[in-house]
Length: 455
Image 1 (cartoon, rainbow, N blue to C red):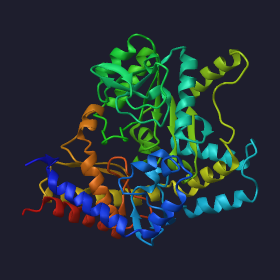
Image 2 (image 1 turned 120 degrees about the vertical axis):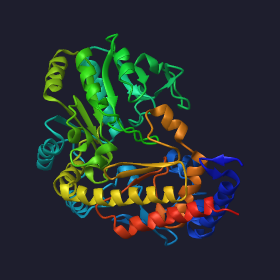
Image 3 (image 1 turned 90 degrees about the horizontal axis):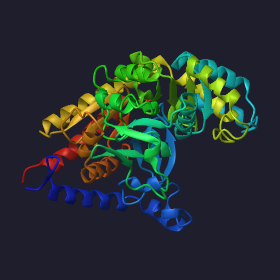
Image 4 (image 1 turned 60 degrees about the vertical axis):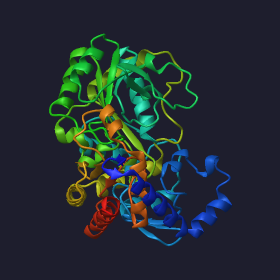
């Protein structure tokens, strides 16, 4: 019997066809609206990755409140995707919505700071630690600027990243490990530069490989998430992150920690919670409650080194900064999020809901005898259709089951539950209810019962 991760492939494909047909039949208004109005967009979507949702056509969202969506056809959907972390604290948290409305009456952008910006800076250091902050629009931008600073202060060209990593669409990290060599990732559009000139890839959790890559003195910085998240999730092994810190210090490299997804782990992020000292810290997505915003901060030592470099460089464009970054709307939303939304109490609620979800999914998987596992990092939960734990990006790629996962995702949507389209990521927000968690667990159980039933 042909199987995919313990599921009969014939049964899986029949299930996928039936669920796709059910989704399409239930959404005539959405289909009609897309047919009438999508041609203006390249590939009929505003962003190309919107095609990556596994449904026959995208949902059109009418409203989003708390942890729930309503689509154009009137279906209510429990949202565990939450904008792939952008709305991790729920859709339009009231303090953020109030701050945006208030600032909108005062102007949206004017290339100057505000009093709210000063307060946001203080709050950033209270929450994440004493860094010298800059504000960007996306974590991609923040990572790009952090890499420039690292190269500037070290005088070195290369960035060390981990195979299968995610740091947005920064060119410098679009590399992979293939047969022990760093290569450009397959599928890059219009790629002409040799990315291996500026980056080296090694496997996550492999300190010996990190040491070997740093030994030549060419690496300016290690850029890492504390947990690999844009693949099947991979946790750091004991002492791995502190091993990175020590290796960077020995070889004169910086450590850039990208908390854009691992901000789910708790107040202040994973690094602060684990006592990991970052030279540069990057946080994006949810940091301003869902408004496009990211921050990056330099340690006092790195900031001092950068000031020396900056004072001596030739005049001209730095290659950092975009006109609409650090605008007053961002300051207002950032201040409101840090002061009133990103709180210990809210993280405690998220932790409880995520624990309930992880325990329920694990129980269902065991009841159906499947060789899968569940991983959780604070409010972030993922079921992985393979045995675990996974150790690195190569194992994560092998564990990914796109056909099976797509069918599961459509089945969940048809049962009123939305999870992230990329892998099987789910988030519990402060406003996610026990009932919503239990509905997702029940829907998951119903689907696995259908896929594993004996004739």
